[in-house]
Amino acid sequence: MTIITSEDELRTMHWTAFLAAAAPAKQAAAATGWNWGSFVAAVVGGLIGAGIPAVVTMAGWRRERARRREDRQWADAATIADARQFLFDVDPVRCGVNVNKTPGVEDARWADLNKRRDQVRRQLFVLAAGHPSRAVRSAAGKLEPQLFTAAVQAEWHVADVIKGRDNAEYLSYAQKRYDNAATALADLEREVNA
Image 1 (cartoon, helix red, strand yellow):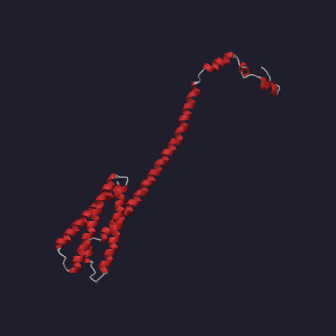
Image 2: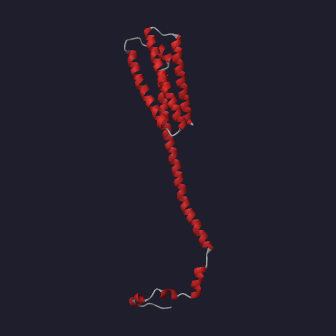
Image 3: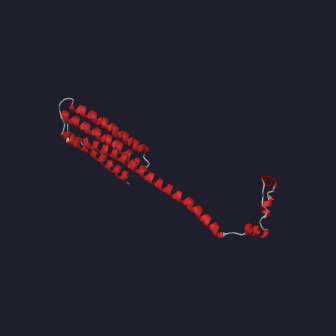
């Protein structure tokens, strides 16, 4: 074994001198020998080292997806609640029975109801245009015209009652449109819950 005593000796020493220090038999054994235990431990360690962050990341993605789905359901539930409340308020039987014949009262009431109708229709348009579920988009698209028709028929029924021209046939037609809208709303609610 050679001991290097000065910095000059270190600079002048060739790199092969370091290899000469080891016995040729040991070098040959180290170069051709294969330690399977070390290899398997390295592979398993690598898989575990990569697998743990992958599992944690996947769990985080699932949690985020569930949170977004819950947020979406709350937004959809708000739309359904607005539509249900609006349909309740434009029930032709209730509207016809509770008509106030004082001039201007029903006009103001229906102006407010028509604003609400337009807001609910817009919410349904948004669902029909951009909801991730095709079934919800379809159900919202079917509900919108039926809700509009039910509201218009109820308004016309109230106008007929005020003018004294109401009859059972017109009320029956308005009630049928209302029932169709209520059925379409139930379909939308079922799709949102699914």
